[in-house]
Structures are given as structure tokens and as C-alpha cells.
Amino acid sequence: MKSSETHPWSVGDVAARFDLPTNVLRHWESVGLLHPERDAAGRRRYGEEEVVRVAIIRRSKAAGMTLEQIAVLLDDGSAGRHAVLHEHLADLDRRMDDMRRSREMTEHALRCRAHDILACPNFRAGVDDVLAAM
Image (tube, rainbow, N blue to C red; front, top):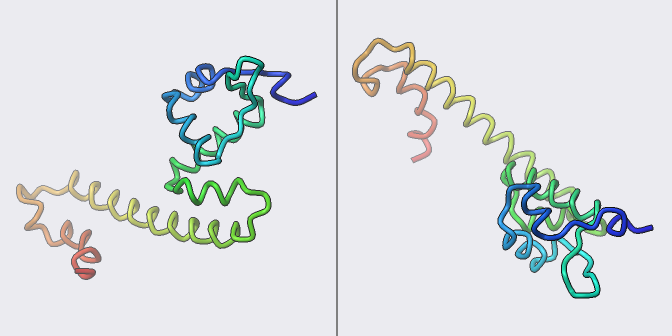
């Protein structure tokens, strides 16, 4: 028995479950990320596998992946999957490093007694890497 026959959720049910507008699910279907079955009246019916795909898409988007990268991730025949995943891991590492630096700068600003944090050399050190890249 197909999973969609076991748990046939409507587009509205899935949208509500993931707090998404229905048009987002329709868009993801139009770009090939989702493939819900249709009932006799032509209405979308999401089985468990499609609901899992929605969860993967949500998590991947939250982590900064593009829809194109997610499509490669979900394509079981994609030869480029490892390259996309390595690229994404490198991006995550860069962003995590940026967040760590931002956290350190914010913590310093909370502790800093200077009225003008821009004049504080220790605070300014938190953006030296950004200034150096200019």
C-alpha cells in the first residue's frame, strides 16, 4: 500500500502542519521538489513520503540551501550530490564562524563601559576581518 493511501493529507493540511502558505507547496511542486498524488477530483494528496520531503526542504532552507541545491539533495540519481553537500558544509562553516564573531562582539558590547563602542579598540577588533576584506 502506498504511503499516500495510508495518510492522504490535503495541501491545506500540509501547509497548516508546517505553517506555510499553500502557494509555497505549489511552488515547490512546480520546480520539481514535491510530487503529490492526485485524487479522482484532481486534488493534491500528500502521503508520508511527501510530508518528509517538505520537512527536508524546510530544514534545508533554514540552513541556507537554495531550492536548486535542495533539488540535487533530493534527487537520488544526482551525480552532483556530494559536490553540493561539500559546498553547503563549507558555507555553513563560514556562517557559523561569522555568527561566533558576531556573538563575541555583542557580548563585548554588553560588557563595555564605553559610551561610544566605535571608539573601543576591543569592540572594533570584532569587525577587523570585515574591514580587511574591503
